[in-house]
Length: 485
Image 1 (spheres, helix red, strand yellow):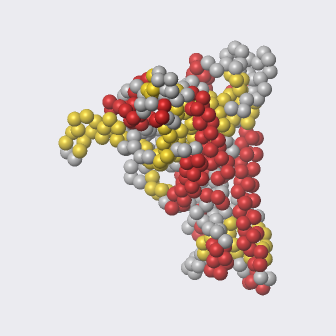
Image 2 (tube, one colour; image 1 turned 135 degrees about the horizontal axis):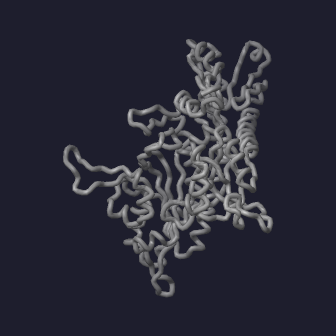
Image 3 (cartoon, rainbow, N blue to C red; image 1 turned 45 degrees about the vertical axis):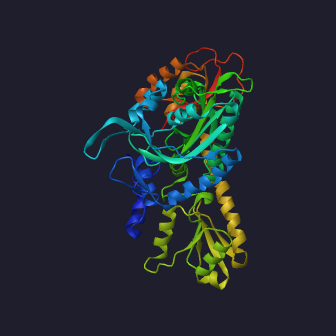
């Protein structure tokens, strides 16, 4: 691809053995693959679509869990674990659900050299197995609400091009499953969880997102409706579904006969929700913040927040709760070490030269923008803490500015196709009809099919008489459109 070669990266690689061969703007796909591997987040495995997650990636995952898990426990959600293996009889009870997941459901058909009498499905998601359990264990209104969450892995045998974190065949996630006596309770929880997902992305990963509702075409199979967190990658002009919170309504309750006796002694069906985020979060963060030197980590999720070549400095920072690591390797030059930690995305680097020692100071170098500042040793801890906070906020602000610069409001089909060609995040008035969305997909397929990403919950004002950009019918809502991962 033209412009895909990273000349400065190649020079750095020649000098240090480190560096990227592709640029983010020139060949995004290759750049991304290089970053996640060279930064030490993952290693590739000999089964396509499966990856080894290293400590840096797992620290990010664990940090998010440390935020999210206490928050849902405040909501009285309790932890559980359901089996990895699903019977086909249970999986096939919900027709729409099984049809949507059938192409990517992996089956166990053998034990050793013997064929199983009945194949067993490997968990692509857990709505069916949990609904089957609830049908036997919910009897009365005192059993409600039922609120459970599990941290686990799932397998979806993707046939599209596997992409680490973004689209893999096995991944880690949390999945929450709840049941209520009323729709009002279910609706309330859907939005509470969605807000936690927003906070996860914006406060920890420094990635701006939109809270919205999916179209009927794009909602979760078997759900009443789906809400989502949508991120956007300006470099590629593609949206990414970051997390979802579904109201399943009573669809699964009907299929699995999940009923209870209400306070009046009458039989009623439960209202169910399910919600999840996965290790896709890490991939979104890499795509948004990474640059031609490698990974760029927000301080809140960085395994190592600061590197230094002085043990005393590192010790004082660690004592203050800062995740600092010394680099005392003598067989590498300072330049090599700088490139090494830049590739890994460490937010802050401390340099101490002869002049710094004479002046009783250190030099701090930021990974996000390369700026340098001299800090008196007497005020090192306070200044470093302030810098890490500033880096976190600055990364979010810069990402939001870049995302917002890509948003284009359009009102006609010609404006839509022009904006799509410019890799924009398109906000358009829409009639909210399934057939119209399918028609838009078909008409844009040749250049990369466009679809609805979400209709923002915070809707802009819709002037009276506004028409749908695609059908010319009266518009019902503003909706984000674009290409997506």
